[in-house]
Length: 530
Image (cartoon, rainbow, N blue to C red):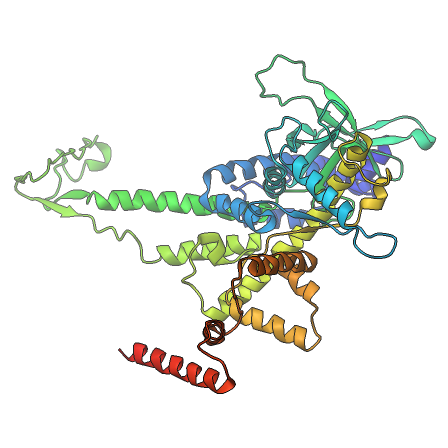
């Protein structure tokens, strides 16, 4: 049984597995800022890099601790956390858009409105302790994944939770013990393995999570024990980019060393600037120091130790020097001219490792021309949308399916059918942010629609809205406009002026309209000339 656990963690080759276990003490720490490129070269030469789970077993705790510490003290990583939260989730979170259809193929408007209203009501107090809205829970989840590499969300159910019988409990990922690795059961179907706190069946499917009931640093007197939570109650959200990995390193792992070195450089440069700002003085002696002995016997004599006296000068004080003494100021070239270039190089490396642009990381759009900024913005938006789609798949859809199931069961939502699968047709719309040149983008969308390259539904989805909702909203607006007798003509401002003039009776024929438009243009030209 123990061999199966070793195979899962370290691979199938037993000889390689033994050698790797022996070399664990000298294995470099990926998140250690004190181990630069030589440590990576050492690991490559020794062939220490092995399976994904072995690297996680050795590095996850230390890397996560370093990531949490740097996120707290480094302003650039703090900004990255805010950028991830704003561009992926947004201020109000991702919006639920039910698109349940009736048997005739049309949208079931009443059902969709009922689901939408109930979901919005539940989102106001989405967590079990009723302290977070669902939008705040979304932001916490994406921040936790970026900082810690994974997020752990428990889905609490029961009639005593709320009227929907469903709530979320966001757990600290450190409660899932990395060092809890063992084999359970005997042979056959009951054979189970625990890898880094996650219990798997014999085919590698997670069936339970062994979670501590509290952190070791908690001040409560409750005994610290593990709780076995079934897998269908846990959302383990992490970006699994290596086959077979059961957990994941923080998204900041690639830049932790660079961020640490940048902070060291900034601190050293600040100290040098402080020293240079005080203008330190050095007293030199133009005459030879007396030794008190003959030159021939200097090698065998004890030469007295002369100590340079310290002189503290007050502001505007004049010092009279002795004969042979000279007072000089140290010429320290700080701030250095290379400071900006060095910090920019560090920051560009950090931005590349976090998959965001330099301007986004530093809030400094001055570097680069418009073409480069536009290209970086497009790549950045695609990256955030990719993360958004991944988050919807791993978090939002699973939460919604569990919510609608228990909402129907506990009477929080009353729908024609009690089968929750009939109401899985929903979409989550994320916030879309304006581009560098929205006017050009909008013209491109219009040309694409006119030429049959885009549909209105595709364009609305790209802009973070829904076409059906837009139509309904437009219909409501037209009804209100007609109700109050307001004449609003979209398009060219000149056309609006002409339409308003026609409504006032000033323009009655086509010739009148042309003359009125020409007069308006002439008046505008005279105003600009003045």
